[in-house]
Image (tube, rainbow, N blue to C red; front, side, top):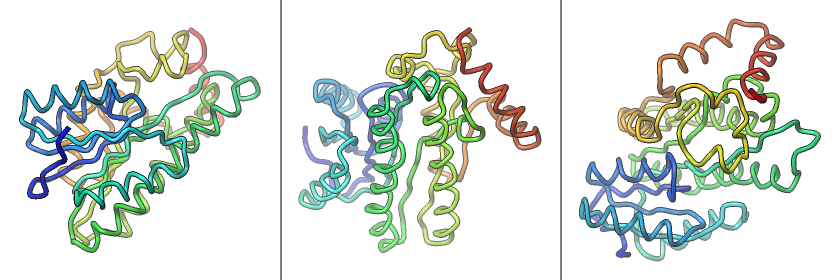
Length: 264
C-alpha cells in the first residue's frame, strides 16, 4: 500500500491484523489518521489496509515483521526513517498470553511472550519517544490489561508482563509530563478477540460471562490517548475490580484471580 503522507497525523500500530489492534486501526482511520500497521500475517494486514483505504481514504503502510525477533523494533524504526514517515502516535498493541499452571506451560513460548509483551514494547517506546520529545509532541498507547493489577495464577507470566506494561507506562508518563508527549496504558478486561484462541484458554471461567467487544475497547483506548489520560480501564465492573484489589490482602487477590482464570 502507499506510504503514509507526511502532512497527516500518522499512527503506528503493532499487532494490527486482528482483535483490538485491528479495531484500533479502524478507529484511527475513521478519525483521519494515516497508518503504519505491523504484524506477522501479510494477508491480514493487506486486507485491512485495503478496507481502510477504500472506506476512509486512509494511506496505510504495511510492515510485516515478527516482534519475537529482538531486532524487529530497530528494523521497523529504520524502515520508517528511510521512507521519511514521522510517527505521531505509537500504539504498542502486540501481545499474547499463555494459559495453564506455570510448571506445565511451554518455556519457549513464554520467553517469546516476554519478548513481545515487554521487550519489544520497551524497545519501540525508546526508539519513538526520543524524536517525539525532540518535536515537543506525540502520544504513546501501551495496551496492558486488568491483569496488570494483580498476580494471575494459571496465567502467571502473562499477568506479570502486563503488570510491567502498566508500571512502565505510568513511570515514563510522569518523566515526560509537560513535554507535549503523553503515555497511556489501556487496561481492558475480558474482550471478544483472538486472544483466547492464541492462549488456548477456552475453558477458563473468565470467558463464561459477558465480554466487551474489541470495538468498545478500541474506542475507549483511542479517546483516552487523545486526552493524554495515563490509565484507562474500559467498563465499570473492570474499574471496580481493579480498584478492589488495592485494598484486599495480596494472598486473597491471588486466590480470587486463580478462581477466575482457572477452568470453569
